[in-house]
Image 1 (tube, rainbow, N blue to C red):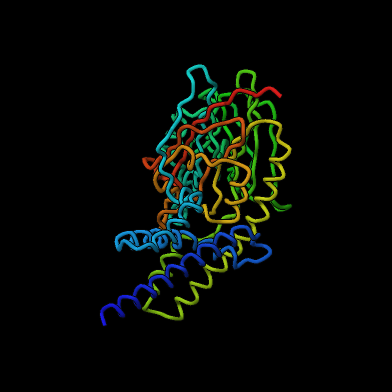
Image 2: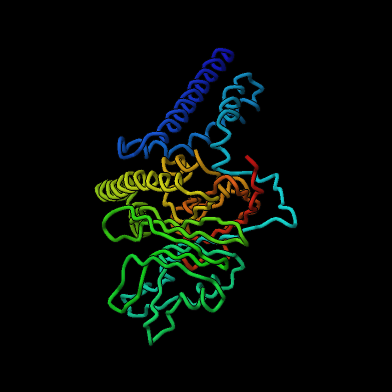
Length: 379
């Protein structure tokens, strides 16, 4: 009787393991599908971390039972190691650059307008001077800042952040303003560089003026040219209270839960579709870039998405190559989300990556990476 029960239990666990493998394969397939062609693919791809974790748990389960079925999750783990690295890179091997190599240190941050609009209902809005000073003091060669806010005409407060971050510290700047408020404050994307900016431009994702865009700057690094992109892809427009309302309605108010759930799903779907178009516009621009380049910013998408996957096909991810751990960059009610990234092309190599959890004044944590400019190969 016990042997029969044991066999039945083994079959059930094996069937469940196979189901997880099929789920994993489906999610990987959905990452290849543009969300604007089939938007449910975005939600299925979003679930891939769950399948990866369950597959790893099955690996432990079969190993502890000394079952040969362990080879099923093991094979999946080996073949899908790239996806496990996206989830939690180990960062075991880091090759430092030669002493005479040219290096580039890039900081990226969604500044959340330096909290300029925080508390506006109480008429106590004010730029976070602590965040501005932290950025200005950071030793990076280049800053790529999203939701950048500056108001040089402000008399009540010193809101000329371009001067406070760039001019005073000898950095050249390129600021692309997407909108202005009635008090002459400008909001957009900015690149600050200690290297001379020799060329620059803007990539508009739509005909309407929007903070969701990309800017680029070509930098003269002592005779070599490197391009840096700062980008901000389509936001979810999901507020912290939306998530909290969904949490609190679970089990207490079924109608409210359905309403909040549909609201979140609708915004997620809109974001998936918009970013699908936007990342393809970025990739087209990359194809015409004659220099090594880094593209950094707020992608508003996790590593298991069409957006990330398309970038990862052509570029390297600095966190995967030089970071370790979970690397969460979203400072909000949804934990463990990594939606800020730095990707880089051939001709560069990332050798250090850091998420700056010590600066928690924005709804994003700053990220920084160091690159070495590889020697040119003779053709």
